[in-house]
Length: 140
Image (cartoon, rainbow, N blue to C red; front, side):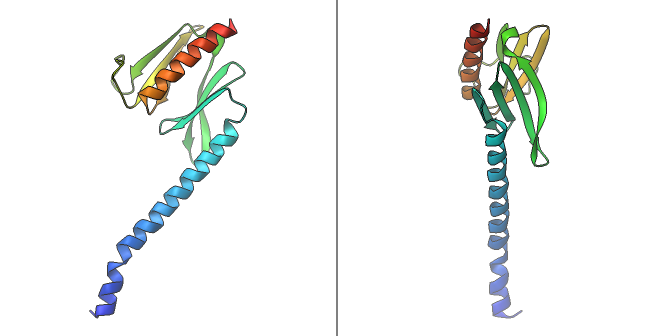
């Protein structure tokens, strides 16, 4: 094998990594742009690795990002909210402690419904929990 060909082949892996990172960056920018459109006018909104959520006109709705668009996953009328619990994302009904970090879910209970809203970050979920309870009291 000639020296020029060997030298050229050494650049192939970094070039492939660059192309892959560029494509992933473009996909993330597109996801964020679609999120801004989807959540425009919302009182409260989030986008993370677990999906998107928005509170608009007293209705909390959440979606996952699949096939280049937001797919609805659930909704909850905030004035029906009676209880919000912070639970582990993967281990059944285990509640999270104040020190817990990482992926989790908010369990929304009220009006005969019980729905789970996933979060990638427990700190952000705690803020949402407090905001939702405050807003549900304002809706009554």
